[in-house]
Length: 93
Image (cartoon, rainbow, N blue to C red; front, side):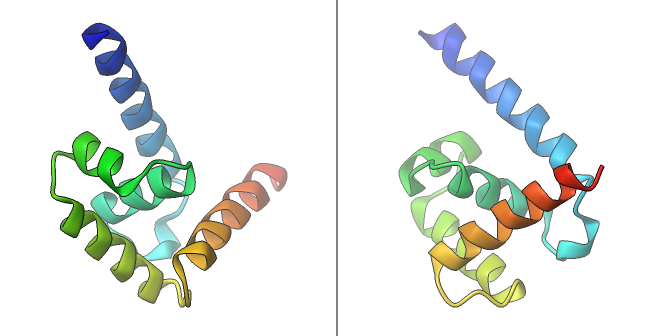
């Protein structure tokens, strides 16, 4: 199980790195983007904290800062903005 978890973390990190490079205009730090990526993909705050080796409070803070930077009223709005941008980027290739 430990090897599986480590493999998943490596794959998630590679995915985050690849996608982060496509969104320089968002104005998010890599850590904020990582948290938004995992949040938008259904990770709980607790799982995000474990993956990023930070506290749940830090995760909530990163989400709140990203929400404000992207002019989103709620966490759900943030998820929708991220997913909409991701889909539009893929479709416009």
